[in-house]
Image (cartoon, rainbow, N blue to C red; front, top):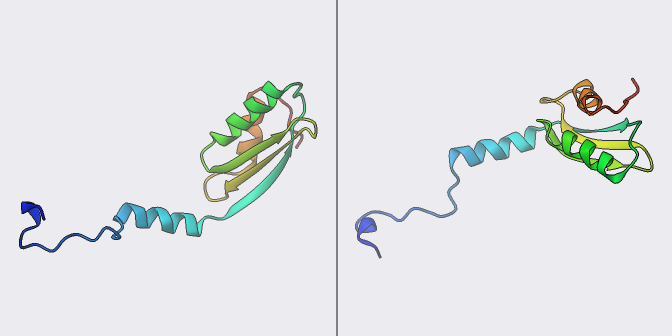
Length: 100
């Protein structure tokens, strides 16, 4: 036993910090929805990767996948943090068309 712990109870390793508790509570209360976006104008795998990266980096998005052949993006997102029009506009910023 180290001298630091002499006479003091050892801290438990299973005790979570307050930040960890908040993080876990946040994930339990998230309202996650999936949005299926049609994306026009993608011609190659790099296009699809660009759209996927842009959507994935949008705050509130938990997962984004793009189907090049189907010309669609599937986005899982927290409804409290991001709205569908923000996701559509993120794709439009890259120069692709997302029909309304």
